[in-house]
Amino acid sequence: MIRIHQVLATLGYGDAIGHEVLGIQRVLRSAGYESEIFVDTADYRLEPQTRDYRELVDFSRPDNLLLHHFSLGSKASRTAYAMPDRMALIYHNITPPEYFVGVHRTLARQTFRGRRELQAYADRCDLAMGDSEFNRQDLETLGFPRTAVLPVVPDFAHLDREPNWLVARDFDDEWTNIVFVGRVIANKKIEDLVRWFHAYHTIFNPRSRLLLVGAQSGFERYLASLHQLVGTLGASHVHFVGHVSDEELVAFYDVADLFLCASEHEGFCVPIVEAFYKQVPVLAYAATAVPSTMDGAGVLFEDRDPLHVAALMDEIVSNVELQNQIVDGQLAAVARLRSKDFAGTLLGFVDRILTNPRAPKPHVAFDFWGQFDAAQELEELRLYRPAIYQALPELTGDNLQVTKERS
Image (tube, rainbow, N blue to C red; front, side, top):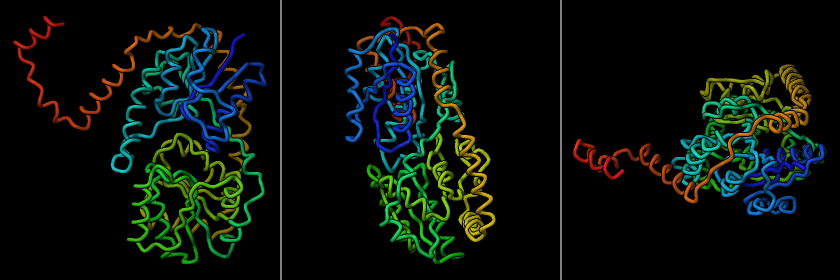
């Protein structure tokens, strides 16, 4: 019997990738496939639903299929690469490292190496799927010969819970609530959200507040710079809420008058369609996958000038008829998204993979990844410290001959 397992670095609780992984497992098991989830790490609430990636060795079979979720390189990924199983890649995008230089050196290095490591899978995979057309095009650019789109169809069940009454008590009043949901991370451009809100609050609506809902851990330096910006601007009523429960998230969407997104790099951006579902008007910067995620709904803009964005915010918040038109369009976009046959699309790709000739089996020497890491380090030096190459001897005719003889 063919078994279809999933492999990924980390299974998080309540995030978009976690929801998709669990949804894929439900589809596969409903179709009669045995299916396990192998991870490097998992949120403690999801650990009972996972297996340690080192167990792959015992489960691996040449006829099995591994669905490999790639976001950053990991021990789980490298182990899966060496297994004899067929492999399909599901790509959730890697944020360019430039966003993290100066605010998170470790993540800058991880994202740089992740994008390079991803290319090693181009010939390993029978099919590489992006969860958006933007991500599929990224795979194509990186050299993957067989690509497709496995659409994100968000599960909104977590938004149908009763809202947390404490949040409603604190923020459900006569003030205007501008909300953003997402990790406090550099590519989300939270600093621009603060600047735009400050302009709106100062010029148009002093009875307004900005609610930034999302995890903050791991980006303390960036968070500190945001607090410094708030202090420098004298921007009052900016609330860094942090990570919240599902019930609290529902309450924040319920009290929101506008969802504002400044992000410059998104592979999909699930909170946008969550706001659609919760009937919150969305105003978003038109970058990367955001326009396709919004699917003609909401309001997109390209001019990041604070006065321009503040004027757009005021036009939406102060015009009830316009809000209703925006929400109607957003609900139509949600209906189109939910009408997509995720299960049928996934199982169709599985059949296509299993019936077509497979990619060549991997040949992984004992030092394969060691050499790969060494090449990455040299590439980092070439890109970020090019002057170091000036210390190498110039390749003249004499030492060129010596080099040839040694080789």
